[in-house]
Image (cartoon, rainbow, N blue to C red):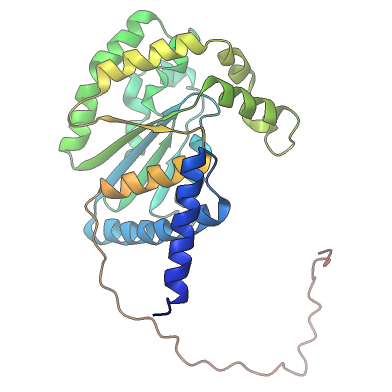
Length: 281
């Protein structure tokens, strides 16, 4: 019996995926894009369910510089509405914020009903970069680690679905990615003086990560770790995982049908000179 085109393509995708896995090589772009398209459809279903039910979802992304947090977040946001999916990437705290309860400046950004908030780095700055780079004392870091589980328990008990991801990159791959930013005009903004200073402190960050996991990996807010040396695999795996952790369902909606419309002919006296931009491309 002759196989359908869709069945043949599915077998080809599976074959390419298995081949890449067997060789330990990067996932092929064709397979990545097809799988990502499927996941984007599910993310839209998730979005509509969150809107419909008033659910609250909070996703935290942490990891070393160059681990792939930004690319993963972009992959999630590519086909969804910014009215539902909101990204929070706070700058360094002001003097006023430094005098506040540490977690205070993050609380206003927590999701309300019908929102999905993604933290591109979060309150865990205190357990990571602030601790390693000396922006807080060891005592302050310890107090944060002691208090964080209680804050997150309160979040979960308020109805927030909280997901925490750590992207794990190897030393060699981190070096390759940071070096690639040096001479690339599209990426140079990603390489800050702080990134350069942090690069030399691999072991300090490893200890900070381990301390953070031991103190804040709880039953109500566990840490999920994604290997991120292969960016494409990491993005697909993370999106698939977060979809599995939210009990969303397809929301019924009426089939869309465009109404008829009348397009009038140009008016005789309508001689407005439009300022068209140059068509360089």
